[in-house]
Length: 219
Image (cartoon, rainbow, N blue to C red; front, side, top):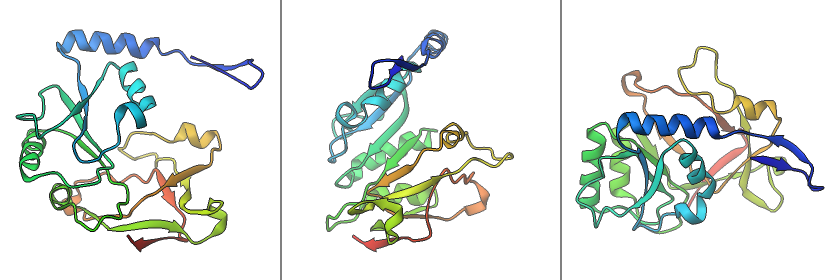
């Protein structure tokens, strides 16, 4: 992949072949291609429309990316490496919750991307899943009170700070390369969460933090 400036001059290049080759070897050894399933049926964002770069990155590492409608499936497929719930605008059903919990109880993985939603309802079943892991969701929308820390005219697209991991952290380093580039980081339309570290079972690693002047308002 070659990145060019406005004059068409190549300014940087990256080689993706190693990821593709090692991913293909892993697929042959394991006998299947692990898949990231994008949950559908609840107004979620689309993998093809909203996560095109993420989907491309997954394929570079030999992961498949597919949609999953649990109202039509008997269970989460066995090749699921992750179920991604991207900004649903309504809750999952009781039957869908049972299928997701069966998958999670068997060691499955889930990622909940819960954008603020102004609808007058609660995510009863999704909140039950969060609670099992000690996480609690607020029905708010975060905005920045300091005009220096948000997009001009948009207090809900807030500037954040990238943090490097502590040397003894057990988490995966996702930010040091970005910190070195001196990038400004903005986060649009976010809500706040709380967690209860029951029995010290979490590795807490702040990668992106808002400023103290950011607050949440009921939404």
